[in-house]
Amino acid sequence: MFEIEGKKIWVAGHTGLVGSSLCRRLKSEGCELLTVTHPNLDLTRQAETEEWLVEHKPDGVIIAAAHVGGIHANNTYPAEFIYNNLAMAQNIIHGSYLAGVKKLLFLGSSCIYPKLTNSPIQENALLRGSLEPTNEPYAVSKIAGIKLCESYRYQYDCDFISAMPCNLYGARDSYNLENSHVIPALIIKIHNAKEQKLPSVEVWGSGKPLREFLYADDLADALIHLFVNYSDTQHINVGAGYDISISELAQTICDVIGYKGNLNFNTDKPDGVMQKLMDSSKIQAMGWKPKIDLKSGLDTSYQDYLNRVLKHAA
Image (cartoon, rainbow, N blue to C red; front, side, top):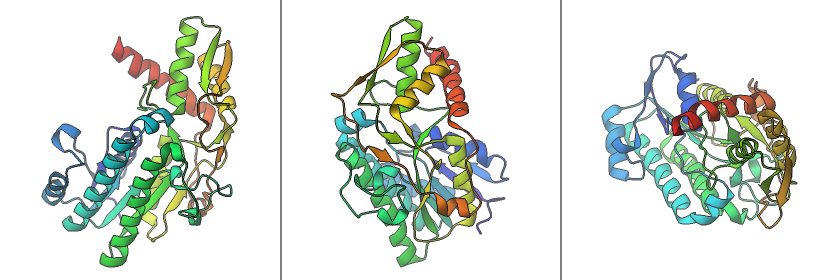
């Protein structure tokens, strides 16, 4: 076990969806929370990152920092996705080794798994097939992060671990119609359609793909559980345990927002992988299970959009 109480824990990427949830969760753990904003530290710069780590000497590091986005963003900016995420992973992991960090957790993504694989996806499916082309650069950077943790663990006996969450959503999500993930993008579209009294909303793809969604606060609980209790080379999946079609997801968001119009599925847009459900039996056997159901999580996410994003824009 790694005792968090009394330790200095750095959450890299503390302003994002996962990072902000982790910070809220860690405040109840009796640790000293370390954070630093992008203007004060560019994590893609090796020397800056290493110097910051040596100066502040965290006992533990959780890497929630990432350059993320949906299918459109991945297709439009592949160079930025692979460069920024590779740079952040290698700089923080190597810098943590140099600074003598006792525990590190690298956060990956379910897109690391092959496009065609059995479902639910087990951890050993990694590198057993071709990746989904629409997010391959991002996936490659996340696989590199996993392998960095494995390699530093093997060569230097560092207690560096990796966790692979499914699709995430929740308070403090990024709302941008061009670059957001599916849930915030649908919230924007459906809210606007309701406000403008539009008869229908366009949804990208056929609506048939199945996706697994986990509320960010549930992930934060899982990550702290792993940080304290897990120490092994194998990366470990973290998911909700069930999936839902994009069409059913869109209808649920309509119900949450109170939109009564139609959903028009644009089949000229890519679907991506048709099913992506992960096998999370390992972490559940360790005593963790998600607490927040999808409907409740979407309710909270929509209120966050209204109260944080729209009010700030006004």
